[in-house]
Length: 375
Image (cartoon, rainbow, N blue to C red; front, side, top):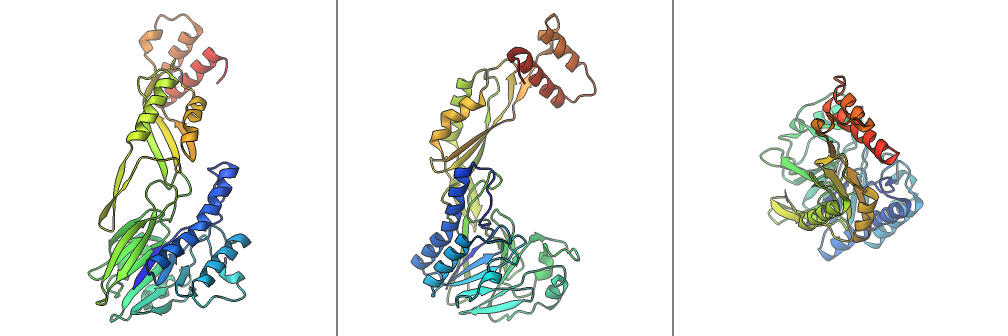
C-alpha cells in the first residue's frame, strides 16, 4: 500500500509578494498541483492522499478552486482523499458541498478513524473545547498500522487550552506508527517513541521568500509485514531562493552584477529528508530569486538596484534585490574636510545617542542627499 502525506497548500492565497500578473499565474499553478499530485498517485499506484490541514488559505474557497478539486476527485474514484481542516481553512469547502464524493473523507472536532486496507487513519480537528478530551481518550488498535493526522505546532510541553500546540509527549506509547502533521511549511521529522515517528511534510510548493528551499510531499510505502518506508518526493514546479551576495569593497553596479551572477551560478544546497540527501541546484529560469546584498560598501560607491534587477530579471521567473549593505565610512577621511558633507559626517559620528548601525544609516541617507540632491 502507498499513501501520500502533504499539507499547507494555502490555495487562493493573495500572494502579495508578487506583481498582479505573476500572482494570478502562481495561484493557478498552485491549484494545478492538485491535478499533478493526483497524476503522480495514479502513475505510482498510490491508494490514498492525506492532506493534514490548511489546504485552503481562508474560510472562503473560490468557485474555480472547489470545482477543480471536485472534478479531480470524482475522476479518480480509486484514490481516497483524506482532508483535515487547519487553522486557516476551517468551515471552508466541505460545508459548501451539496454532495460529497464517496472517495473524499473529512474529519471533525470528534476523532474519526477510517480503515484503508491494513491501515487505520485517525484524525481530529483540535480546538480549545476538545483538546483535553482527545489526549485523554485516544485509543488505537495496536494490531493495525496507525496513522494519526493533526494540524498544529509540535512541542515538548503541554499547554492547556492551546489547541494549536501539539504536545508530542502526550502521544507517546499510544500505538502511533506515523503522525502526519501540518502547520509547519518546511519538512521536519523526528522519533515519536520506539514504535512511531512524527513528520511535517512541509508545503507542497513555496509561495513567497519565507518559504525557500526544497518542497514536496512524503510517500509512505507499507509492505505486507506492515512496515512503513518513508520517502520524501521533491515536487515543486518552481523553487524559491534567497541568496546573500557579499559586495564588500565593490564600488560600482557592474562589479556588483558580476558578483551576483557568480553567486547564482555557484549556488547549491543539500538537505536531508527521510534519511536521504537532496540537492537543490542553482536557480533556473523557472524559479523565483531574491538577492540580498551584504557587506560594507563605501558611501561614495555607485549602486543602482534598478539596474541590477533589470540585468537579471529576464533570466528568472521573478527577481527581487534587497540592499542590506552597511555604508563604510572612515572618520579620518573627514577630519579636515571643510565641506558640508564633512561637517555632517563628523556631527553624526559624534552623536553618542546613536548606535553604530543607526549612524551608518543616517550617514548613508545624508551623503546620498548631499551628493545627488535626493534621499
